[in-house]
Every structure is written in C-alpha cells, then in structure tokens.
Length: 230
Image (cartoon, rainbow, N blue to C red; front, top):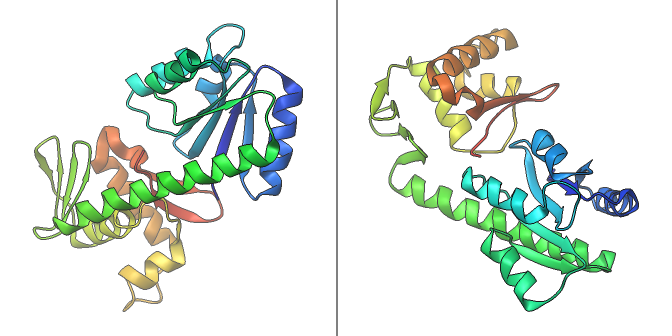
C-alpha cells in the first residue's frame, strides 16, 4: 500500500484530501507545516502532496532541502499561485507535478495515480538494469551475485552463506514484505522445524554488518521484513 504525506497548513484541505485518498486505498498522513512534515517523513512514504505557501518554511524550501539530501520521493505541489514562473520554480526545486487551487479531487487522485505509476516504472527499470549486471547496487553498497559478496564503500564485508542468501532475497525484491515463514520456506526449506526466531537472529546479524546502512532492512510489525531502497 502506497503511503502519502499531505503537507498543508489549512486543516480543512488536509481533511478533504486525507478522506478521499484513503477511500482510494492509500495510507495517508497529514502535517500542518513543512517543519512538522520533515519530522514525519520516512522512507516508507511514496509521495508528498505539498502546499507551497505556508507559515514558516515554504513548500519550495522543503522540496529543495529534500533534493539536496538526495531524497527522491515524488512531490506534487498544491498552490493558489498558478503563473508560469511559479510552475517553473516548482519544477526547478525538484517537484514532479503542480496542481493549482482550487482543485478537483478527481484531478488530484488522477495525478497521484499517474505519479505513483511513473515512480514504480522508473524504480523497476533501475532494478532491472542492476540485475542484468549480476550485481545489486544501492549507492555505495554492492551485492555481487556471482562472487556472493557484500561490498560497502569498496570494503568486502564477510557474510555466511545463509546471511548472504537472506540479503539477496530481500535486496532482489525491494519494498516487498517477506513474512518470516516465507523466508524460512525459501532459505531453510530443508529445515522446516526452524522457528521464526531464526530469521530474527540472521536479520540482526545482517543489520550489524551493514553498519550505518542497517536501516536498509526494515521490519513491519506483524508482517515481516523488507529491503528499503530509499
């Protein structure tokens, strides 16, 4: 389920957008300032609906800060300003789309779906390209599927066979949540008597070896684990 962060200092607008997007099946969260949004934003958010004119930090400034921090989360600007210069400013600071107020809810939903579809297609294209080289590359992390090695900042990190297989499974399917039982069935299929705690132990070891990149493997309470590429 895609998670959307709505950022607008007008509570009524947040409530309307939240209600309608939730009805479309999205997980929605609201923030009433850019400062609050920066605190709430997580790698799990798939899209930001961002008001331009707010008290304190503007939407443009927030978007620029995110892009400078290499955060590529898609952003749709919401604004009462609709001149060509305003739109160009929005795109120049890293916006993906621009919707003028007052807006149609149907238009917002259509734009949201289009941006999320495009983002998913781009992500899949990058993953496919990485897979053809038989290496999974995530910034300064390389998972070499031929040599069965994990390399971080040009340093080889020793992994056991099982640790590598768990890492490979998660990294080859980024953003997909694997239940512990599913991981056991894939990695330890010849040992059906193992408990789910076995998975937790190996994930813990992997996170420790990933060091400052340990957040690449995230847990979802009640579900399991996934590899976070953002």
